[in-house]
Length: 294
Image (cartoon, rainbow, N blue to C red; front, side, top):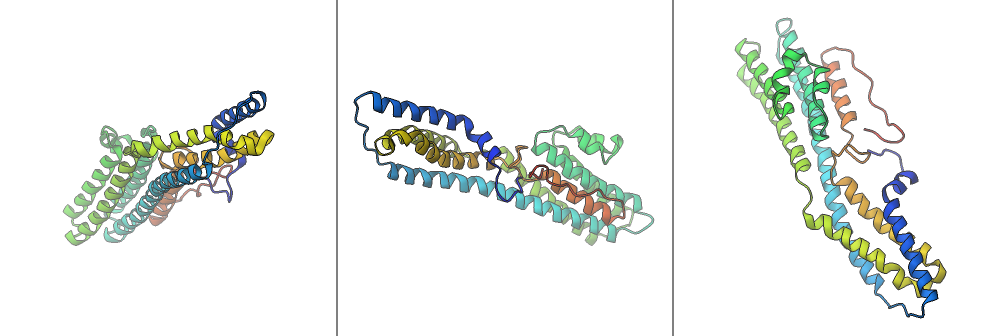
């Protein structure tokens, strides 16, 4: 996630330079042709076209941003639920009998959010999980297709073991299980966003109409702007191409790009809070790198 007050020019140019270069070349071709060949440029209702296209792009950007913001909200719920789980097991389970079990549940939750982060970004999960759990404790979950859900199931079984040992009663178990339900619901929402792309109409037509508008733009402007057509048309095209690119950037909040929800930083926040809850030494929060928080 870009945390600078304004996006850097280099980032914008990197994303749109290819279509922008093609647009500039086309603008030059139209301008040169207009002055060499005796033809009359048609009068195009560019204002009407541009207004309609702006509305179309606005709908797409809003849909993409809604997905991004919902993803951030779900991870906010995950952070709160993780804190609630750690506080519950710390306060409900007695010392010194359940000390190791409490520590195990807290470490499993940290491993869980990191496994979920890797699943959403389609990265290998083993290293992230084994950083917090031993192979014996993690191998059952790592063998499952959905490793994160396997870790969450294991946490539920350990809470049930605490009840069977008399360390928590049924009311306390129900309270902890409700937190696990919140965690599972948040994970399901994230997987829904990751696995469900925008409808094809939202992806194809804005791209098609934006490129068509950029092709028609110099034809409609050449009689008015003359030799300045390549500059004016390219600048106007940049505005529409940038908005189109914004929709592409936000549509997948877990694509492991600079525009993503900062999963690494939020997983580190959970790690810090949960380790401090059980009195362990916690690492430092992640800091932005070149204006980007990962």
